[in-house]
Amino acid sequence: MKAMELKARGKDIISLGFGEPDFDTPEHIREAAIAAIHEGKTRYTQVDGTPELKAAIISKLRQENGLDFEPQQVIVSNGAKQSLYNLMVALLNRGDEVIVPAPYWVSYPDMVKLADGQPAILAASPDNDFKITARELQNSLNENTRMLILNSPSNPTGKVYSEQEYAELGDVLQEHPKVFIACDDIYEHIYWGHGPYRTFLNVCPELASRTVVINGVSKGYAMTGWRIGYVAGPADLVSAMRKVQGQSTSCPGSISQAAATAALTGPQDCVEAMRQAFRQRYEYVHSALNAIPGVECPSCEGAFYAFPSFQGFIDRMDDIRDDADLATWLLEAAGVSTVPGSAFGAPGHLRISYAAGMEHLQEAIGRIRTALEAAL
Image (cartoon, rainbow, N blue to C red; front, side, top):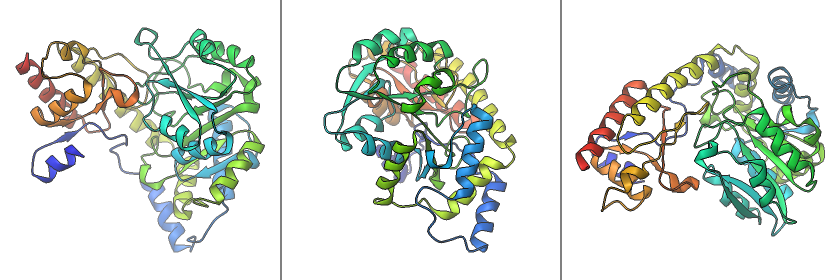
């Protein structure tokens, strides 16, 4: 809000806070939406999505992820955010706990609360790449635990769980049959780690009866405004989610569904081109931030966020108490908008999005460095 106010007053602000790609939606996807309009596909669809889109999702999961689902196990929603919220409303009862590893996407804890659950924040250490360990998970489980959220690649850290890490978590979860696993894979296509992308179910198929895969087209296809996400999981749980959605928003937009079908079934070179651009930007931002005194930026394997620690700088500034103060100071002193790490459960950090052109990133990081060096 402060950044928008300053922009409205004519101040030159570079925003590194947005969580959406700066690319246009690929042309063949836009053309599919236009064609759907001309063909009169402007009416309600089935609550859980058109047969064509559900078939495309099932094919995608089979071909790209090696996972087999039936139509009754898939529901399409207005974005992955609604998919996850529907899941919580359908599954949680009052007092049920949901383990939310921190750093976390800002909406997770409040979504749990809105569904009458209790978020149990499990802080992951930077020493373990901001990923929870099997021992930490074991020590956090209790009789009220109902769900664990796994987000890989992560927002805000870009960290990715390895097969071994998933296997170790799975061994713990095997002993707790009441706990469901929600895999938020929305950044799947923005991944550059070693080896193919692996989701939790690839490693722990024996937990399929209580695991849901959440994904969508927003990030990988630059379709944030189209609002299409989906869930694949146990049929009885998906059926309950369908009832929740049927009494709230009903079906997603018919034109957006036609566009998402084209995204999943059409040429995928656009996805690879964007992935390569994000990786190039990551390499620049990671190097440039680590060259600034008082800043420590860890490496990552996906998404489009850097999550550097500015604690070394904060500790040296009398008038900056925490990351929230620092974000406000950088906005005013450098004209750069960031997001405080405390919003993600990780004080002392800032989330810096590189979903912006390289020229904007170079200018923004240059401003940050100049402001920090002048203040010391």
